[in-house]
Length: 117
Image (cartoon, rainbow, N blue to C red):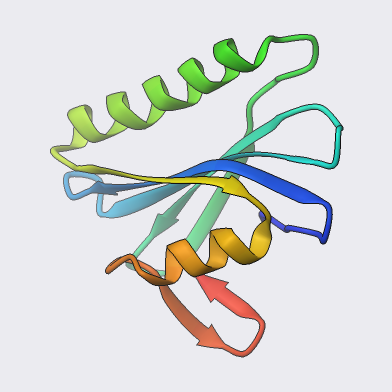
């Protein structure tokens, strides 16, 4: 599961609807402090709320290559499933990310301290 710390810097997050698969995808590009960029995404299947999370291999890769790969993955997933990509440009910490996410129609808070997308 995606977890942010006080040192986390989020570049962007993506949400993809996938109607033909009956699921959605949430992706994020972030790093802790000056550490390496990390890219992850997860599938959530509505029928049983099952989630599968994946991490892209980013070690030694330049930022632009990681960003391009994640964008391509999101756009391709939407195109293959008749879905739509929603991009949230953050370029800030976890508090900014949460604030921007809370403005999205597909984002909801389940209970205090637990974000759900």
